[in-house]
Length: 258
Image 1 (cartoon, rainbow, N blue to C red):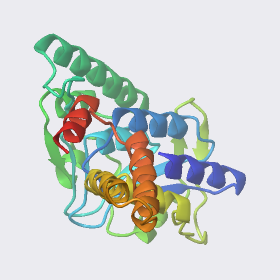
Image 2: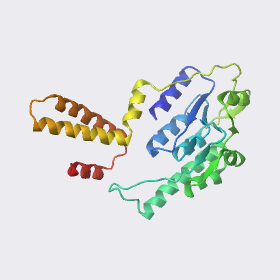
Image 3: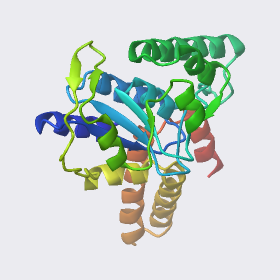
Image 4: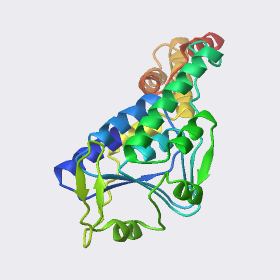
């Protein structure tokens, strides 16, 4: 979420005419999704989500983000939806029926509010949450979930140039896009690092390497290198666990197994 928030900050400071977010995601954490949406809704720069390239998807959290944006566009051969919330309890078990219903109702209410405010099809939006329905770009366009099907960013700019859109706060914006330069904003080295270590498989590997290094150090006092490397790997693993939604019961069981 930090990357999106920082990019919106930059777009506002530089008075960008439009911010295009290229999206291809199976979903993500509810907390990160809501942070992104909150920043999008408060943005003074119009925000457009573009599900691309062909073959990409904006599922689950990505669907919420697309619905929340000022403009929602999909490339040919993409899909969106499948936004039913998935969660587990602290013990690692699936949520009980009552809790699952509460979470689902909350998510459905949230997507309905966003869709209503953006003038999108609330029924199809809710069905994506309650029934896990997914839509092709044609179905989404015909169902008035998205604003355009476009094969490129240049096509998007040509289509929306001179058009007026209404922001979430009700303020109208005139999009003057003709002749505007498209500037790519890559992730910073720090953000790329955070993305890399937030991989659950890598976090587990770092934990194992860290514990293995400490084991060798304690087994062979004075070796130094295994202990130093083990400590570094363990610190990276701990940092990664702070980013990931960790099931601590499962983590304790892993440590006991070692």
